[in-house]
Length: 377
Image 1 (cartoon, one colour):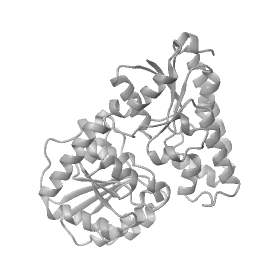
Image 2 (cartoon, rainbow, N blue to C red):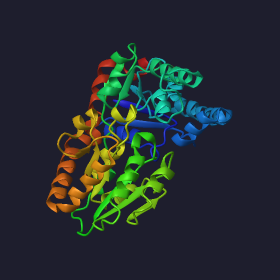
Image 3 (cartoon, helix red, strand yellow):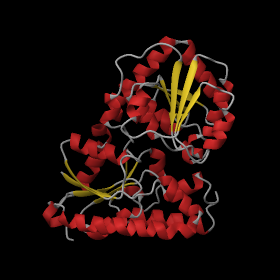
Image 4 (cartoon, one colour):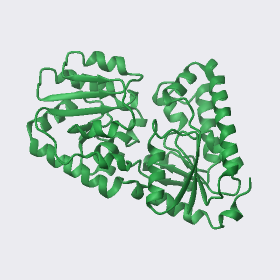
């Protein structure tokens, strides 16, 4: 098949679409990218929702990107399907107008309404103008797609009744650079633990900060915290008693696989929000691919995805998280076993070519006309 990867996605900020493109190519498909990254990350978009008077800036940035996308789309070869990358809630509407007879595949990794609730932008009951706006954004995006890609069964079940038949589940997975970063051996010494994230309620970093405080005085465990965000200050304040924590604002996408792979343990999420119960975070797939042992919250999608190949702790339990880290510091053989199990599962289930297979099967059954017949611009 020939795919057109389309939109304002940024593979450095949001690697999911990069994994899908890599997987399609690894499976033997051709992928042509028509991509003009929007110069605004997720935190910036959230800030605009908190301060609506900044929305004209988003409209201007989006209009600039869309103008370039439309020009480049006209020059692109005909395709069997169009893949709209993650955070494509608006891009998919443009794609629908540009490629009227070509199947449109939307990577709907998160809903606008769910993200707004998780970040306390809207009321939990779903009332209010912002909640209605978020639902309108989601409905329009889903209505513009022929195939809706989600990452867990829980997200599939949450799709509206009219979109659910068009849904397909594809794990987030990890790119080849994460597998390549895996070291042949790790040196001894203190247990090296890493967390990478945006410090949102989904991540549960307030509980992580409490766990780090409990580990204060334990010179067998060193922790690296990468990123900044909504709950950063609270997390850092909670962990202030622990001098064996290193705080890094961020690292580049090129450097990140090597940094994570240099650690023994990669931490997942520990939040108690509704969203936290329904996701398997990108960092879990990446950490496993890099050969780290995984510790994350005990939720249905993470249990289903990781099986017995990770350590699970109750969401929101700082005490359980601290105990899990101590158990690995106490027992190098146990640590090595969990590292090996996570790495083996990643090779078997999380590689890019594997995670795209459900999408290719679904689109193959959706697309029946040759590209030249499908597409009118």
